[in-house]
Image (cartoon, rainbow, N blue to C red; front, side, top):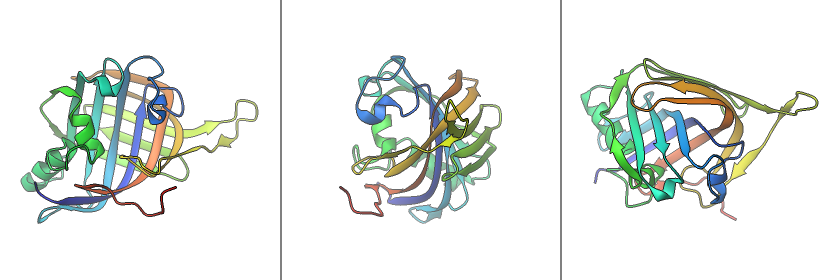
Length: 214
C-alpha cells in the first residue's frame, strides 16, 4: 500500500432530502442512493507523486441503502493529470491504497459490484464551502450546481451543518440544495436535493481531524 494524503474541498449532491438520512444511519429518502460530485485537491501526494491542484469526480448509484451493496461507480480523473498522477488518483478514489474501511473510498469500494472504466476529462470545480454555493462541470459526464437552503417564508438563506465527530468522510459539512444531471454509464437527474460542502483532510488511514471529538 502506498501512503497518501490529500487536503481540499468537496461538493457532493445525492437524491435524498436535505440532511441525507444516510448521515444518521437511516434508510435513504427514496429507497435508493444516487450521487455525483467532486473533490478539488489543494495539496496532496501519493507516494512521491504530487497531486496539488488536481480534481477528481464520481458518479455513484446503489439500488438500496449503501451498506446493502450492489453499487455502481463511474470514476473520473482530471485530464491535466499525467500518467503517474492519474494512476495515483485512481488508486486513492477506488480504495486500493486505504487501510481496510478507513476512508470513504475504501468503504464505498466494498459496496460496489461494478466499477466502470475511468474517464479522463476536464473537471471544472468552483465551490465556496461557507457560502454553500458551487458549480461542477465534468465535460461529457455531468453538470452540478449548489446553492444555500432557503427559508420557505422569507426566502432568506438558511444555514445548517452536519457535525460528525467520528465520521469517515468529513468532520463538518455545510448543507445546501443541489441540482444536476449525469449521462453515460450512470444517468442521474437530481433536482433540489441534498448537497454538502466540506473541507477535507485525509490520508490512507482516514480523516485527519482538526478539532477534538465530542
